[in-house]
Image 1: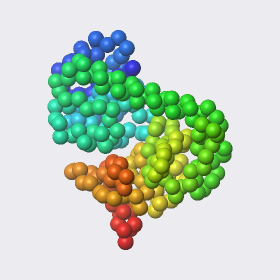
Image 2 (image 1 turned 60 degrees about the horizontal axis):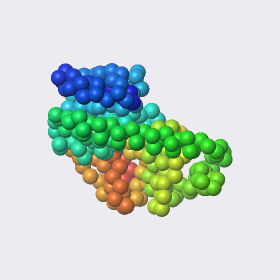
Image 3 (image 1 turned 90 degrees about the vertical axis):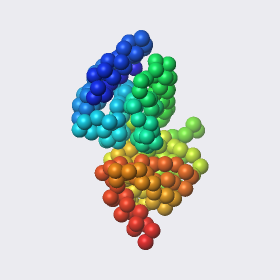
Image 4 (image 1 turned 120 degrees about the horizontal axis):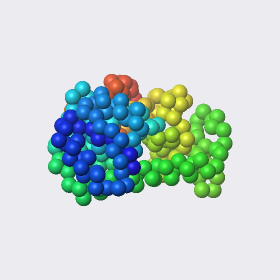
Length: 249
């Protein structure tokens, strides 16, 4: 597993590198010391996993993770001295959250969790490629692969959609379907009044929103009727708030 280390403290980078040197199945491909360097290193190096500090100059680790494109996103493990960001970390789909000073056994556990998540996504992608799907020309739904062939998922049945690299997960009340599509392609197809883009990696049906949580610093998350929390990206907050107000009007 190729790992990028991000921390503004040189001692923290050295400690992580020393711990990882004890694991023969990982390699450190680079380091970064602030949010801007982290974003550039992720784009240039395409690591499998980023060990990411939260409080850093120029951009926080949370902001870096939230801005990652869903189509080519590494696994993220936050490494920080502060417990208070744990909820926010998982809103941006982190694989784990480690507190400094990091213990070797806890670091190994987090890396294995990230490795399993990566393997699961790869397996899903390969399964979806096993058969060629019918042409997806239906403006009111999607044809998605199932074990016995393909099934149509009407747009009206979808509660929310999340990105999974080159695929998306279409979540309905009864099950989730994997479908090959990009978020930008979906944005062109979907009616924003029915399925609103709330994050680079998520769409939500406003009618399924039961609660809006304020996370501080102007950030919010949406709680759906089934209890699922969906983070709203910083650049989407105003548009989502306006869309929810229109829906309630």
